[in-house]
Image 1 (cartoon, rainbow, N blue to C red):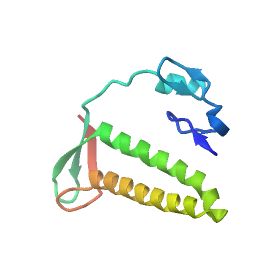
Image 2 (cartoon, rainbow, N blue to C red):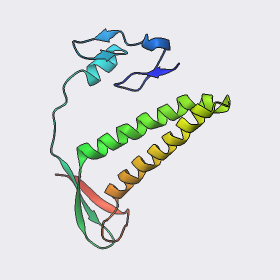
Image 3 (tube, rainbow, N blue to C red):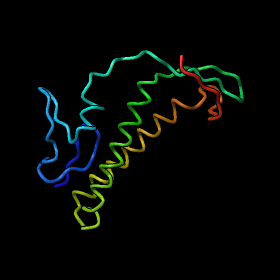
Length: 131
C-alpha cells in the first residue's frame, strides 16, 4: 500500500514509515516538511482584484480559496498516479477509485477556472493585482 505525507504529499513507504518527525499534534516526513507546514499559517483576507481586458468588468476572488483549490488539485493528481498501477493490474476497485479521482480533479479544475474567468463575458484575459 502506497501512502503519502498528509502535509506535503510526498510518497512514503509502506505503513507510513516515513512520518518520523513529530510535534504534539502533527507528523512530518522530513525536516523540510516540518519547517514548511509545522507553523500555524496566519489567515489573510487578501483577494485578487481582476479587471477583464475584453469588457472592463472588475471582480474579486479570495487568494486563500484559490491556493486551497490548487493544493487539493495537486493532491488529487498525486493520488491518481498512485492508483494508476492498480488500474493497469486489472483491479476493478482501483479502476473505480481512479474514475472518481478523475471526476474530483475535473470538478476542482472547473472551480478554479470559474474563479479566474470574467463573470460577465467568460474571458480569461485580465489584469490582476492582490489587494
